[in-house]
Image (cartoon, rainbow, N blue to C red; front, side, top):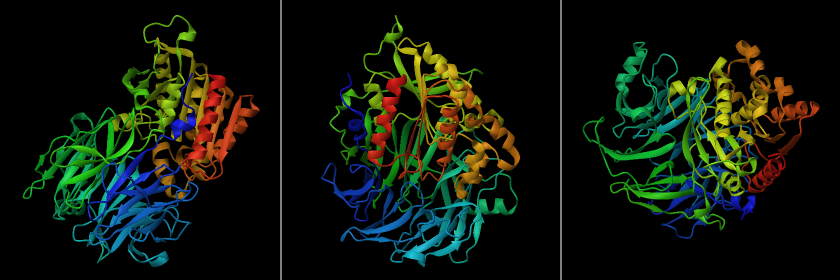
Length: 621
């Protein structure tokens, strides 16, 4: 008999997205105590926090001014992802809408060092492309100045130390980017990263002298490495038509990705993370004053859980804040002493009265797929599961195979209230990182590209076959669940391998790649075509892999959930798969939320969604 209902598990809170104020004493962070992420502040470890925003809609980030007691935060409406930027005066609580263009997206690009202005990217001019803007801190509405007119997916990535230039990232695909430097006086954009083929140049930060950049890249390697880029050398290579960027590799990751670097460009202190089989390893250090490629390191931070990130330095770079989480540890903000690695928890996100010791921890496993590829995944068994022998079907636990979205994403051992709820109800939980997932190198991520798309679905089938051989599992009670691209994977698994499943749960998933690409937001179509194939050149293939064209094969009951305002995977994907499945006699349930987008951000909606998922799985699994 489970001890707690789904509402209790969904009331387990999480805190993250921390940013230090200019005095170094106050910390802002996002906390979902009210049901959606809002901005809170506190001035010491585990002290009583103060709520600073009070909206029904989610706040997506908050960033303190480096000089004044104020911060900018972002918020969209109904999950439509058309975020606006707001400034909150931390002394008076007054809030101003800085952008006030609800028809456009705004992506934060950071404060200038003097705090007088900030940068952002927006598709105001043309919904399909992003331009770069600079706006004064006390300006509102249309006061922003367009400093560069783009023709693709541009994002400002940081101000130079003297505030005369902006670093600009350009995305061509998930695994292909470029870096540029924009001179704010002349408007000239210098290309820094000539390359041949798909190469990632990510997480770039200005060097303290402004003459170089630190970044992570997979240029000439399979995994992301930490590297230094000299600007003069990069410009010369680009002018000369070089096919690669001149880089100095500082850390190759030892076969794993260096996920990113956070750098304080006043002190030269930094934190970079390494992703080892989904678990985070942080390295803290300080750059050499005379050699930009040399540095010393400090003791590794003492943090709980398996995953950490979101680093923000205090003004003196003596400490940094980050978010830490794990299978049995809900997300909280920790503050770490740079030189000693000592960590102190500042936030106390509650667990809704559920004892932490009742949460279950996952085990990293590897499953051999059809072509002998080793597919990693995280298996979590409910307490009391019989791991030795199954004497009858009743002895084995039902299983939920939860497939991540992306596809260039990765399931990691972080806290999930939904997962812990189902474990409490006696389900086992399996989270595979099938081919196409990030975190395991460029080659692994490319194994599902184009005509190999369905090989990733075959990986899921291999995982189910492996699960069926585990003594703790009932092979006749295995369900699949996934969101976004994971929703497509659920539908594809039901159509390609119908005999394996007792039920399927599709959350904001793709049913038809043709209609998805036709109707997704204009600003993201080219990026998605780079992954899936283009409407012009690959329509026949896209139709062949679309689950909507194979509904006749579905045997298991299907539950489809979606947000009506979804700009990424339009709600029509849900409508058409439900209609087709019902016409063919598939037991089908549908739940559409009118005030949600690509996922469910509001607590009351999450409670309704997963209460119904629980009922559905209880009935069919």
